[in-house]
Length: 307
Ligand SMILES: [Zn+2]
Image (cartoon, rainbow, N blue to C red; front, top):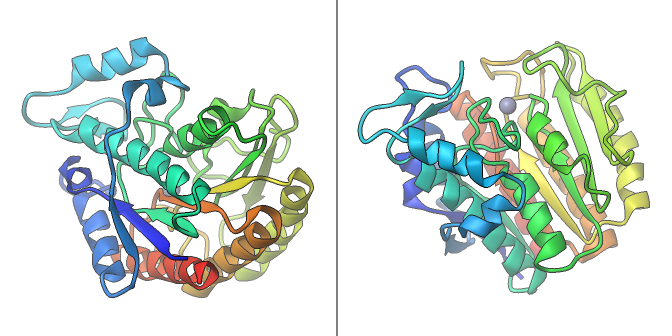
């Protein structure tokens, strides 16, 4: 068994203003770091419109299409921008995650990492937000439930920002469990421990600014019990690397070995619970060096588990 690396050149076509943290160079650096690894390289297809419409209304998709610029870059909210290539990139990100689900559930690969952008976990059903257009991880989970008829899918999000979009999109889905750690206080401000979803199916792990390895391992260690009790048939990871101590957008103190530890633990759980089935998709990470080495450490642990 191998680990799949799923990406597409069109994900580099989503352009943001100069100095915007979510920049084309992020994906270039991640791909460069993964270049020497023996991965099964897969081209991300465009998602079908119906696959996006599982969790976003048609009017939202039409609004994005209407606002797509012919040239230049338009601003959708304080942080989120769209260039002529952004929608294609977002459709590739969703399509890549769905392809990853297909490959992993078919047993063609052990697990998969989707190196795509824009990220997805802040996008709500009708609102682009925080650099995100579509809820990629939530759409992958919903696809696994509906298209592949799984009974239980877990989404695990270790990006430093709260996965508010994933929480909103899956809060009413009793077949999904969402576990997400985030720095609080920090934008977007949600993700308190008392937010538990419509079916007690959301577990929020707020972490204080300045906290590091010890705090994250304690919080996640306790969360693993919830994962075991839920018995997922697939684990989708929202892999953001902005909790790294060098990241400019947040104040957590995670190090590369923390990403390796968390990935290895999730792989062990997946082995026990669901035949190792993990689909991981790139979210944030804004220090280019920290992003590249952390993403590589994450993928190397996936590879160890897939052998
Ligand atoms: Zn983030």
